[in-house]
Length: 386
Image 1 (cartoon, rainbow, N blue to C red):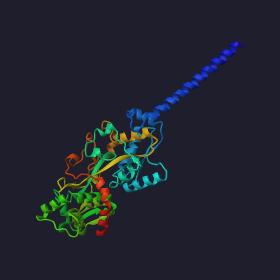
Image 2: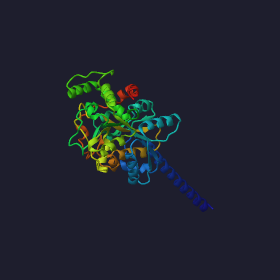
Image 3: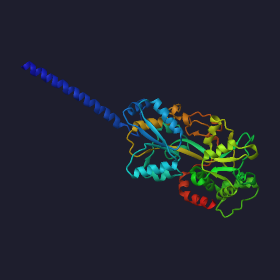
């Protein structure tokens, strides 16, 4: 009888020990998962290990290249799920704000240009989105992009695109060329009322109106006379639109029209350099003037933000590290963005851009706060012009 009691006691002790070990293991795993935050550092291998225990993340992005990166991410990290939804910058703003106000958490990451300061001022400052700027990526980003809100990924510029089959060199040397009789009805652009990036360029010209005034004198050899406008920046926009500039619904369509135009009626487009990828992808004859006066353009930087209350922290961090090219800048995640006219803001990513690197372009400074404060003025001005 005593022997049976002893055996039973030993079995009970063993069972308790197993349960305790199991409990300690689960507790240890739980503690390990809870220690990870957006302030902590983990190796890529550790993030992947933790991410496999998490659920799906959702990304809202204004560029289709992120969709390709999402597919590559799931191939690189089997068992981890990241779904990318392509949404325009203004629609991302509306969706995120509406979801937050309704207590709904859909997206974990957003990527875009920030609609001329609205993301920073209306979403970031109110805690609806947050910054995640890991040191392992930020140490490869130089100023002025390093000081941008969010984690900068890529930038592009809105400038004049022409057909290289029709011209050995750019027919446009100065922004004011577009206001002359020679280019009447031959300048295409997306309707600026519906294009925040073109509005951003126009507001930059207004901010640097003194440079636009100087460029006018260089072009025409005399001081500018304003026709009911405040300064040379607004005057340029007025004269451009009054020169029968053709407004279209899609920026892509404007560049396609340039590539397809005939030599006896060659047109130019004010559009994003992103479309220079058609040189490689479609053998399109497109070019820009990298010495345009007074400046080539202004950067339009796309940045990454995280939304409030992200639950799957490891997966979110792993995806962002992948998207930005990894710790060494050689990861596959950036490949879908690595096209002519799309400029990496990291200084350690090699690019064959077909145009000079970003650091060598003569650009105005991007100023989202200025855009935010003057967006209504520009909107009303454009309404009066149409």
